[in-house]
Length: 105
Image (cartoon, rainbow, N blue to C red; front, top):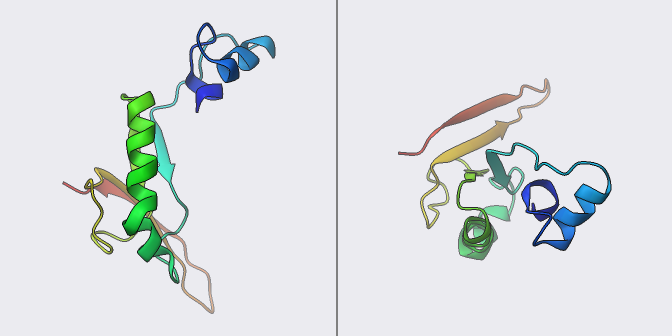
């Protein structure tokens, strides 16, 4: 994230971006934590520590980011409560992708 949206005057990764020719930060409004974390055993670790650790660390550095969760709605229950979600449901034998983005409020 520092590479993409950090200040090149104060961050070495953002300075590298500037060195590569992109001085201005990219416009990043949303970031998703995880990938299909409603599958297999992922919800247990996502709810236990991964969601909160990444959520808190990202917002501490980049308070304007909107954080997206990748679990099913309220399963598992996450703290802090996500405001945005993205669930991809796949069914077989035909593969159907359902993208849902909505507010958890």
